[in-house]
Amino acid sequence: MATKIKIPTPLRRHTNGLSTVEITNGANVRGTLNTLTAQYPTISERLFDAQGAVKSHINIFLNNEDIRFLNGLETNVKDGDTVVLLPALAGG
Amino acid sequence: MSWLRGLRCRECHATYPIDALFVCDECFGPLEAFYDDAARNAHVTRESIAQGPRTLWRYHDFLPSEYTPRVDLNDGWTPLLRAHNLGRALGLNNLYLKNDTVNPTFSFKDRVVSVAAAKALEFDLPALACASTGNLAGSVAAHAARAGLPSYVFIPADLEPAKILSAAIYGATIVAVQGDYDQANRLATEAAETYGWGFVNINLRPYYAEGSKTLAYEVAEQLDWRAPDRVIVPIASGALYTKINRGFEELYEANLISGPLPKMIGAQAAGCAPVATAFAHSTREITPVKARSIAKSLAIGNPADGRYAIDAARKSDGGIFSIPESAVAEGMSLLARTEGIFGETAAGVTISVLKKLTDARALDPDETIVAYLTGNGLKTREVIENVSHTRIDTEPNLEAFQEQFEPKIFAIA
Image (cartoon, rainbow over all chains, first blue to last red; front, top):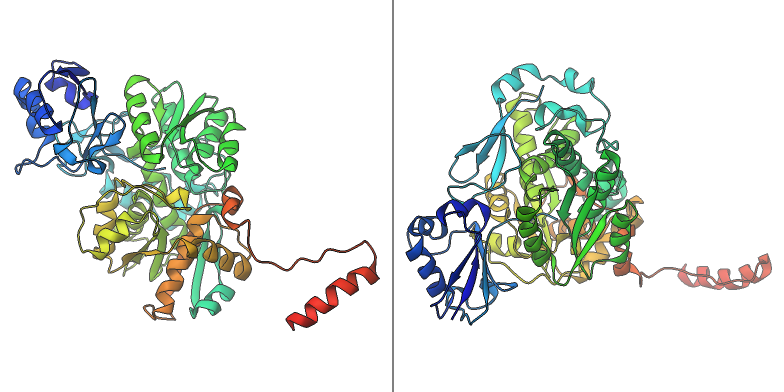
């Protein structure tokens, strides 16, 4: 199955400049990101801390929802889903 | 000249040139402006500040841009009022109100937008944009109009109509996002990567945030160059709160005020209180929430500067507290009836947190306290439409009036 991962500008130098990466095997968000980091190893330490947790300044969305409101990294992904990586920002 | 020297990551301290950047390439941490503090502090005096314009730009030595009249709508330099009546009601003898409801677009956002718009012109960006809970949208639209730029504002579609109108009137393109603020913000963050616009709270954020420091500078100057003992500030993303704290620190480092620095009190409403919750649990890790508050200008469920707000609360011996949603309108009403200021929901939150602390006898009655009123109530009048009041319906003659009026008044007496 195919899941799209959208890569934010600061991380594109780790994906050969690609803004979208298609992942074909990943049952959940963690698996999808593991496949991403296997293809582009230098992105790993940008996304995860030494304990394997998502760094606090990175927000991950599955389609339009923050995965922290779903099942975190264990949230299931299905064919056609989009995972969006974004820097944490706010201020209205 | 500006004393700005570059941008620096708040987490890993990597440095970057002065440009429309906001995220550290190394660690994804937020970038902040940094200055040649030593040279600036040797240069700036109370007198040099007093010679500046009667707007926030009198503090340009502490800001990341030169004074730019093309964007200045007379932003800032708002009144600091002694609040005798509200003080009496709360048992406080030295209470002051910083009234930012009277800024050009009726909220403190004019401070941050003025600085961001100046930077957008400096960077020659083609448009101003933002994600907004409302106040920011109006301010961006107004400053873009003055600067002669188009503007694009991303707002949650269910925003108060008055806030939508107060951006639309300036000619802004309204992007009404079917979702909450956090989702509007997410879309804007993606759009910022796609278009070359100056998103004031995204790719201009390191400069934008600096404008909030002027709320500290003005209060100190208006107190005749003295720091208050305590300040109380509403919290949404936490940026305003942390920058007011930083502003007082900078004045102290520049020998413009003496210590101690103010204890920082933060205010949230229960429907969206992730920072107050983290403070209560003694952690700086913020658990995001789905915002469900009538105080929409504070309804940021995923506050990016929350952890820094908690750091400032702890370091200053302050605290971050929440009040029930029902207390929001009560606080607005108390403020309006005692001091004649119609603040928005965020002001209601601020005043109600202050009341919560005085009810708990947590404050010294003689300390100098400044409450920040950051936006105007006319934009959030929906929440107080059922406000209790005395109403007399009468025909247009004195006898009819007296017939209606006197029984009511005697009944009250």
